[in-house]
Length: 148
Image (cartoon, rainbow, N blue to C red; front, side, top):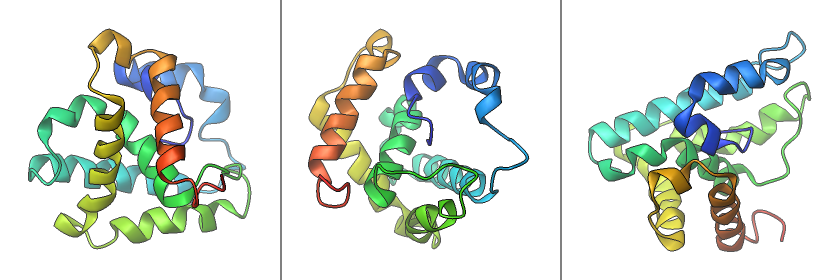
């Protein structure tokens, strides 16, 4: 969600922890982005389970989480050790706080970005180029919020 590597998490979620260990769960990090990421994943899984978000997009979940962050908080993210990270995460938390169907709209917006780029094969989805394509699209769609 915060590392912009959904293409790696898609196929190899444990590799994210192994390859990015130096970037994650450091003692100087604030807890808030970890809470936000867990909340977002929880709400997304419930949205799939309740069909608020079409289940056919389950294989895009890591991409959807990254897109959620960009559309709700923007692209200029402070470091996890910064006091500003909590402020950065708050719009995401607020969008997801009610739960249920009320938390689905940001994910539906993220699905629209995926649809605009077009459904892709499993192999293409695990490539960095696809991540870059959907990032361009979300930045275009939410230009004002993302400062462009």
